[in-house]
Amino acid sequence: MQHFVAEICIDTQQREETTAPLLANPVSYLWSGSASRLRWIDDTSSWGEVRRNPNQARGWLGHRYGQGDGEELALDRSLQEVCGHWDGRFAAFDVSDHSVEIVTDPLGLLPVYYSVQVTPAGRVVYISNNAAAVAPRKDDYNEVSLVTFLAAGASITGDPIYAGVHRLPPGSLTTFSARGITSARLTALTPSDFENPTSIASAEEMLLSAVEDGLSGASAPESYLQLTGGYDSRLLLAALLRLGRKLPALTFALPYLPGYPLTEDVELARLIAAAADVTHRVDDFGILTMPVQQLKPVLGRLQREGSGLICISDLNDYFMPLADGTLLIDGVGGELGRGGWDHQLGARGEMKDVRSSAQFSTLLLERLTQAESVPTLLTERSFDVVREAVAKATSSAMKEGFSLEQLNEATFAKHLASWHGTKVHLLTPNRYVFSPLLSRRLWTSYLSTPRSERESGGIGLQLLRRLDPDGILHRPFATRGAQYGGAAGRRALRPWLSHRHAFEGENPLPPDHEFALLKLKLPESLSALPDKVAGALDEQTLHSLLSPDLHRPSRVQRLQVQRLISLSATVSRAVSH
Image 1 (cartoon, rainbow, N blue to C red):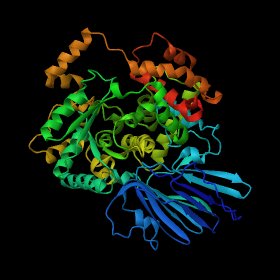
Image 2: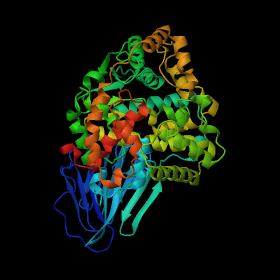
Image 3: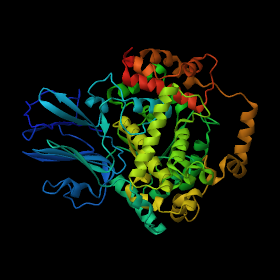
Image 4: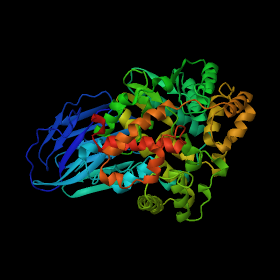
């Protein structure tokens, strides 16, 4: 993924031309004075395009797809006209004598950050897809983003942990000029997406076009479908087969999942791949997991480009033995069509039946942090900051026009996009990730489906039946979703799984080597945290995480250790030790 930095004067005072780029080794670099000069350096890229004349440059970065007329970057058309129909994960920009315009993709999957800084020449706006590159200071932090990451592993607002750095809103056109900064909504999620029902035939057409257009718009040496035992990746496999694209499938064997190395995902993906007659490989992360000392490349990337909002646990793909630039197609996004935050709970989910925004905020806080069941990493005061941030996010969604019934999906979509987009940005260019189920063209089909149908498996199950009418892919499935029967329902369908359940109850669990290695790294990471960060942490929880008696952590404890190490890498020099 190429990087860009734009530098814009928003005061009328003239700037002297800059010679040093803001990034150490940028692929692309933009400079615009106050209505004077433009310079473009090294515009070579594999995923993107740029056109320019002496007074203007227009280009895009990332992975975009959509219907076009072959002249989409024509300089005589407005940027809004050019990008209004685009889908995917991208940022488009237009730099002229008097302004810089940037269009973000519908969900904001490609993050774009900016800061306003005061210099001797006046106020300057710095824009980049690298949050650290535009931070006014690397030792001053956004408290809300910092503590919400520690509590929930993501940002409530989408803003990075650096004070003074903001993320451009999704699906918007933002203009930077001497008159200031303005932003207008273009393709972001709106209440109307819930109100215009579409037919299942139309949804099928939209899914197939998203997969086909997205693959056609990609440029990669090889491509894999990331196949699990669930329904979302299986739906994409059915779509690929319908399109005549027989891509190989790839499954992760994760050491912390029950039954490892033959986890449910591995077992079922093998059955599905065999039924579909596609090549299948398993990457065993128990073997691939590297010693903590070899985590340095990942921690180094977090330090150079991290926004402080992503965890090393989300960067497992970094270690896969695949060619650089490989495209992974995943099933992220199907959750939006079957209940948002309640996608694992189905009809049992409580967030769909709230009677006030305050009740929704309370439930969302617990869903994000699980603080009622597991001690939080934060002091009581810092946790109050998280509570207030969740309440503000809920209030903001209501001000945008979303009803109480729509809050579930509206807030979930923003959270999902912020987390997934930040993760994918850090994996690029080692891995490119394509998530067709996040396509803008599918949102109305998802969200206008009656709630009761979403809770019973949603439009995904209907689409799978249409794309796989012979039932080739109708094998058992792995999911925690109550709408599919939950764990008891899965064991009833699969006697072998009942055998495994009984076996694991009678035998000791294998050692968790990965967690042991992470614990070795934890003391160093904690000692490297700045005082402002360390002061937000609860000492009792830290003591329990450092305890030599903790060998089999809960899922949340594992994540807490990973978040601390990740945050330390972002805000300190720990990775150079």
